[in-house]
Amino acid sequence: MVMPSSRAALRKRPRLPVERHLGTRKIIAFVATTDPRRAKVFYRDTLGLHLVSEDSFALVFDAHGTMLRITTVQEVAKAQYTVLGWQVRNIMAMVKSLQSAGLVFERYPRIPQDDLGIWTSPTGAKVAWFKDPDGNTLSLTQF
Image 1: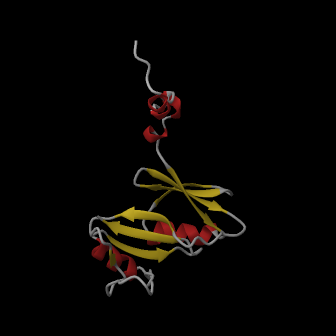
Image 2: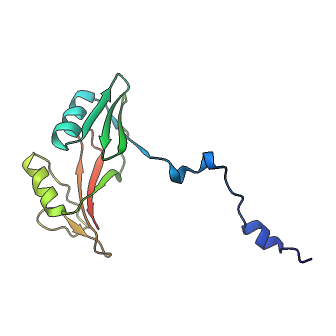
Image 3: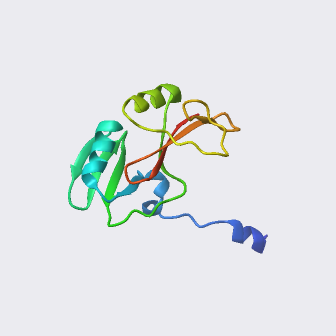
């Protein structure tokens, strides 16, 4: 009988019970706001998300099958990175549409962006960034 080497035994990970396989579960996305009324107008009216419910704790939106909870907080911690993004088919059309609704797209000094504020990554993905009323950085990406 041949025993597996100790290295091989260490590499073999035990299988998780089915209940703990998060790869088969839906994600819930969270963004914070200090002003739920303002956030509701932005996410519902400007971005076009469907408002599912609201209470004193959060606004809940359906973002194409993903639950987006806009949580009410005393103070939003400003992240220096994108906290939420959408994959789009035609980024130029989406940017123009959102600009016509009053959205301003971010410009970053060290990132070459076109006239609409769209950056083309080395992989060819196109990305544009904008902020919600609480300063959360959001993005659009076309792969």
